[in-house]
Amino acid sequence: MTETHDTSGADANSGTVDPKLLEILVCPVSREPLTYDREAGELISKAAGLAYPIREGVPIMLPEEARELDG
Image (cartoon, rainbow, N blue to C red; front, side, top):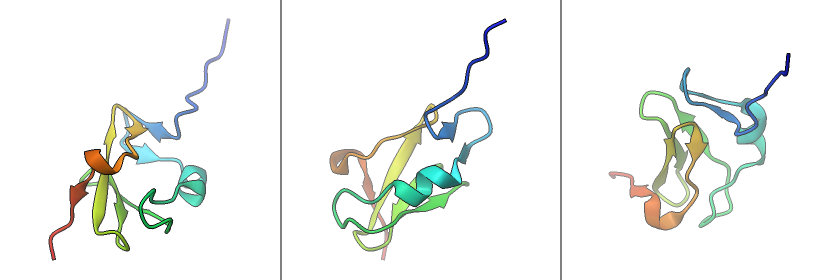
């Protein structure tokens, strides 16, 4: 039997992001740390005012894919 491991850092089924991944990921715009918003399924950059989506368990770290935060 072959064992497989998800190495994406995000679990598409449970909606969680590996804390170790959060430790190394930074916003590509501000170069500041990100926070994970489980409810929205996004990685938040307060410094840049952007929210990066997580699609099928994969963080999409492209500024053009991010939405601007309100306020």
